[in-house]
Amino acid sequence: MDDKRQIEIVLQTYIESMNKSDPEMVRAAFHENAKITGYLHGELLQLSTEDFAGFVSSQQPSPNENGTNVEFEVLNIEIENSIAHVKIRDVYLGITFLDILSLLKDGEEWKIYNKLFNVEKE
Image: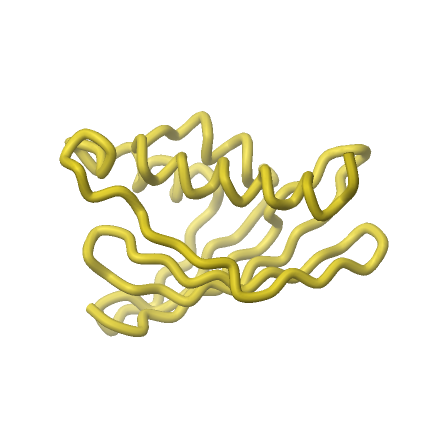
């Protein structure tokens, strides 16, 4: 399977983790040392993978259960050997986010290593 397809699978896992409020899927998509950073409601958030997994799992009922699945659009994927840069727009919990994701190929597996997000619309 080529790198682009592997990255698309990681992105799908990321989106599905939010749809299902599934912390294990967050851990599958993100590197264990990843950082998730951005402003939400005017406050700077700096989360670890575990913090983000906890936040995602706390969303109960899950978006999937209440019929408000995450809407998303991949705007750009750039791959350079063992690193990649992805821009994605998603609507999660009624908020429109623009995510800039940095991915790293760890062995044969791609993982999100850094997520910077900007709220476009609350």
